Image (cartoon, helix red, strand yellow):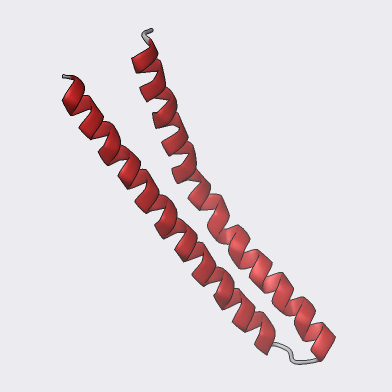
Length: 88
C-alpha cells in the first residue's frame, strides 16, 4: 500500500471515529448537566429547577458539539476531495 493511500485511509478512519463520537458525546453532556443540576438542587433546595436548567445546558452543549464535529468532518472531506482532484 502506498504512503499516499495509507494516509488517506487513516484520515478516513479518523473522520469516521469523530462522527461516531457524536453518539456518545451528546448523552454524556446531557447526563453531566442533569447530575450537576441535581447536586445543586440538593445543595440549595431548589428542586427541580436547577436540574432542568443544567439539563438544558447539557442538551445545548451536545448540539453545539455535534454541529462543530459535523462541520469539521465536512471541511476535511472537502479538503480531501480537492487534494484528490489535484493529484489526478
